[in-house]
Image (cartoon, rainbow, N blue to C red; front, side, top):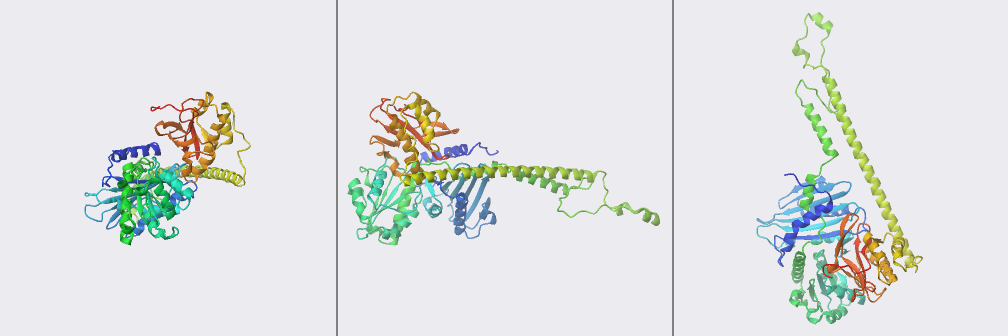
Length: 599
């Protein structure tokens, strides 16, 4: 049965997410062999253009270190390959085109009888999108074992150390975060009890005699690398342990050199057994540290499996391999066909036109008996001495077919050259556009650093019919309004137009700058610089979908004011989402509260 063809990257990603949804819904707290551990990361917008190639090189270096034999030359050129040694087999596939470049590697290890663990890594780049990296571990053993041990945390940390990454829209960290200031501690406490938190936290407290976090690196550093992509490690100096105890209580705190694992959903009323504590005496030697690291890693994997694959947008190895088999080879396949035709014609039996490539050795012409010699010998040369019989028109047919094949090859190469030239021009235009945008952002930041306001020349609007034009002029390339939002402004009843404009300006400046830096935690909650009653929060049950740039997008955040009323004259709601493609905030609805199934 031929493999199914997909129209787009998004369709293929949706199909694979459905294939994993059943197992994700059946996830139990145990790390079962039937589960698939999936970690996804995005390359940050400010990374080098060669980030995708660098990531593939890092993965191949990691693979070669784990194999006894050297990889074939095709692998080092990032081409598809297959390799096998005594304990593992690996296979790589790649799809390259003008709109995409997908590379996937799968490593199967069978060190013990009946044991088989598959580790897959995917590096997918689509035109106009950031490069996405997927890591998957699947235990296929007859008797499932601790598949968590096969998770390549060292490789993930190595990639993050050389390439700036994002995870779930936030900056990817593979090092401990030292909470040495009051502001950092307040931000940590807010995230610790945030019900929307989906990333586990591991807190490593520093013993009182230690003045700073320098002595903590030998223990917290390896822990952070072991939990790379699974959890965030926080280093807590002695002075900050008191603030943690004041916020959550001593029974749920960590101090005096202890470690604590805080699972998502934590609050000051949580069961402390669900958030285990390891005391200092259990971490006194290297054996205890290794055991604690393995336990925290197992807990992080359990939480990852419990939450499923909701962020899975990158393709797995099987999907990329199936798509690669169904993808035509284009010009290469045409060239191979013509070369095969030439070889088959070269081996044709006598009596058919003979075709040979130009590089072949030419065949001398058939011998023609000399008339004077025949007359002198008194007899004509025997047929066996005249060589093979030459059919009339054989040379003309061979030349005509050769010309047709040559012309077809030239046309195919010409089409390929034109396509590559168009692709290079498009890539150059896209790079130039990105450089211009970065230049504008740099100049804007320079003006602000000097105490100026680049938007001060354009005053806030005072009427609703001025808001759309003001947004297009003052917040161009930063905030975009959908057609629905523009229509809703026409009949808006909210009286404080200036407040709505301030919120849009905050989205285009502080919020957007924070997203470009990898996500800022202080962007979630009260927006004090605007008004004490203005909040930036997830939509929750009010989330909805809209169409933007021919794609279905989920509108899951909103700015709200007037939480205790639904009066359209006093209730402000600005529903929006972040568009990673254009790096802009897209407002889908405003300024009234949007009715949903819950309200």
